[in-house]
Each structure stands twice: as C-alpha cells, then as structure tokens.
Image (cartoon, rainbow, N blue to C red):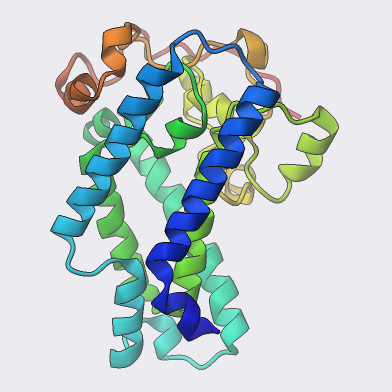
Length: 282
C-alpha cells in the first residue's frame, strides 16, 4: 500500500489539492465569514498564477524534492530515523509532528528577519483572505522554504510516506485555514484544539502588527500555545478587522507583476510597524 501511494504521489497530491480547493470555494460561497469587495476574478487569477510560477521554479531548481529525498536518505542510511530503530508508526507520527514544528519555526523566522519578512509580506498583502491566500507565497520564499524542508528531511531521515502525509496535510490545511468560511463558534473552539481553524489563522492576517506576529501555525495549533504566540480573537472582531498590509492597499497591488516586486518596495515594516493594539485572549 505504501509503495502504491509513493508511486502515485503526483496524481494523489494534485487530486487532494483540487478537491480541497473546490470544496473550500463552494463553502466560501455558501457560508462566507466576511464580505469580500475585491473581484474574485482578479484575486484568483493572480494568486493562482503565483502557484504556477512557484511550482515551475521548484521543479527547475531542485533535482529532488522532499519525498524523493526521504527515499534517497532511507537507501543511504541518512538521518535520525534511519540510524535508530523505532516502530514504523512511531517514526511516521513523530516525523509529521517534527516537520510541522519546523514549518512553525520557519514562519516565525520569516516574520523576525527583515529581509525574509520582505518576501513573506507578499502573502500578508492580500486584502481579502480566502482559500487562494493559502497558496500565495513569493517564489523566492518558496525556494527558501523548500531548502529548509529538504535540510530537515536529511537530518530527520523520516519515512517517505510520512513526508508525503505531511506535504498533503500542509497544503490542505493551508487552504482550509485561509478559507473565508463560517464555522459555528462552539465548533471552532473544539476544532482549534486539534487543527488551525480559519478564525484562528485569520488573526495572523490582521493589519495590527501584534496580531500579525501571532498564530503562526498552519496545521497543528499546539505550537502557538506552547511558545506564547497564540491570540484567540482579533481586537476588532472578524467582521471588523482589517486584513492585509498597510503599504499595499490598491487593486493594482494585487496583480502578479506587482506582487513579485513587493519585496523591493518601501520600508520592511510599513508606515506603522509599532501598532501593537490590544486583543482578546481566551
């Protein structure tokens, strides 16, 4: 079964990607959380255009990606789980959790280091967060992220199936928690104990910097609580909060060509980086 999954990694990941994208898009129309003023045609064509560009660059830059590197590491005995003997289920579970922690720490790093924040802020400059925002990352950030992920795979030596599970989960939960969908508050309170929910992650896209620098998790919600970066609700509420980044507020800023040059424009933190605000924690 494992060999079958790995041999069909590409089609499987594409099917999951398209399936979640379609389900979230329908859900957003049926039960939206916030009113979106920017035409979907403009946002979707440009955000999805970034995905196409990112995918091409990754394939051209890296001769092997995460799952392939995990298989190579297994054959050559590289990495922790290829050196120590543990039950396969332990290695798979631990690998998925550790890789998720790596992505959390990477996310914190891209907020903390000004040159990296310049790249990452293109993701935050989307003024109307929805399912496509979870796919909108600057190509250079994607290349750096892939390099970090490959280094983690080399060090950890995870089972290849664990890497595939992690990749599918990361991609799927990123689309889920960026979606503009309404989930009943009682359900959200329980759900966010196990996975990052849209209401939890939306706080991260607030224009208030203290809220921007919170809720870094994409998949597992535990790291934010553990490391003190968790904020339960935005100061102005989900309907009243402002999404985006202060410097890039025009419709023209949402076009692909302008998104790609955003790292070169203006100060790293915008005109009001010290707006700390106040928030409501659970």
